[in-house]
Image (cartoon, rainbow, N blue to C red; front, top):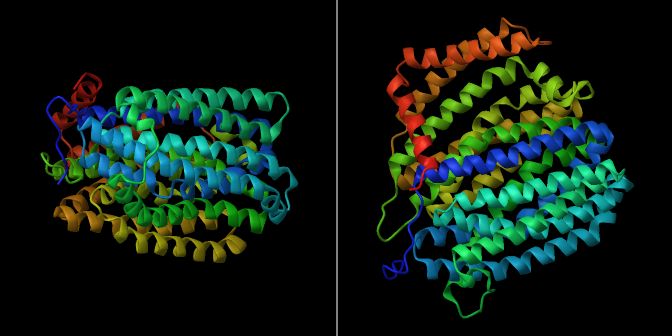
Amino acid sequence: MADTGSVSERARSDSIARNSVFAFAAQLTGAAFTAALTLYLARALGPDGFGVFALALAVGALVVLPADLGISASAGRFIAEHRGDRPAVARLVGDALGLKIAAAAVASVALFACAPLVASAYGVSDLTWPLRAVALAIFGQSIMMLFAAAFVAEGKVAVNLRVVLSESAVETGASIALVALGTGATGAAFGRTIGYAVGAVAAAVLAARILGRAAVVPWSPSRPGLRRIARYAGALAVVDIAFSVFQQIDALLIGGFLGAASVGLFQAPMRLAALLHYPGLALATGVAPRLAEHPTEPPNVAAFMRAARYILLLQAFLVAPLVVWATPITTLLLGAEFAESAGVLRALTPYIFLAGLAPLVSLAANYLGAARRRVPIALAALAVNIGLDLVLIPTVGIEGAAIGTGAAFLLYVPAHLWICRERLGFPLRPLGRTLGRALLAAAATAAVLLAFGTDELSLAEWVAGGLAGTAVFVLVLLVLREVSPAEVRGLAGSARAGLSRP
């Protein structure tokens, strides 16, 4: 049982609504900078240069989570169990920080040293220094991940908005400036390094101020928190590494089979599509920590069910335009050079739909102490993705990788939902009913969008089609009684309340 601490030592966490709103705000902030930077780099570097940059990020992403070794998520679980006990939380963060510094340093140095070998393996000599820049960025990124997880678990998500804003603004500005000076993909990668260095420092300063100075003091081996974090981190490390490989294996195999330019054609829509799961991640950030074992608060199952329902509705709303308007969306955002990416965006639709729910069920499993149950699921999903990629990429091309990713998520997400059901005891029938109604509304919306065209759209067609499609989606949900006008007004009120003080 967690030590509750004295009344004076306890700090009040923000509400679920406030945490979700600020999580979404932080994600929108990062997303806006990421989208702007992606669009600039895609046009400034072209498919070849952007492909080198994307390949460096893909390789680096394989090292980010091993650099973490599950430490951030493990610390988050125990922090959530001590939520409000400021001294205990600070000690746990300090314990995790010592582990994180050691793991991140080893991973960063290893990638920096091996960069020429990786570049040689891909036959792309220009890849060496972008990889080295990414290696340096990984250290700052990993430290930032730990403090972000601590703020989430403690129920102080608003703090992350300041961290994300500082990191994203600096990374975007530095990357654009360096590329404009003619440094190419290497400059873009070093802009990332500068951004994460600033973000890590900002997160550490805020952690010391909000959680206490002990949060930025490395561990001593006698602390029991260190052993608990390390033990639980072991299973999470396997899951995180498997999922990291899962996220990057498409780009790596495409690079091996088809070359760096094809990586750029695949990764550009993939990075844009990744932004679409942010609402689900925001809800997960607010809800999942409230499912952890706590001495005074039982798991908030009702909040989990509401979040899952809202995510299903939102992701279904996104399906129609991605299927029907994939070509004009790709042309508008990425330019004519990325015309082949439209097929990728369309093929990614199943993955995008399920990716909205994935953060909620996976984070919930972490906070529920079910990390070991996640290991076989993550490995099986990875095996499905790799197997289909090896078959489909040589025969179908880059769209085959998107198909493999979606198929793997058809296993990954339902399996995690089942774990949550077993631990929390909620019924699946209401979520199944919501899913069916949401997909019917999406089908009706797709029919409306289809009437406005699928290749080129005028400004009037963009606006009229978007408004008509949205109206039809909401109307179908109202007719099917999945939502009510009162519920819509209530959601708007909850969002406004989330921005106010708890």
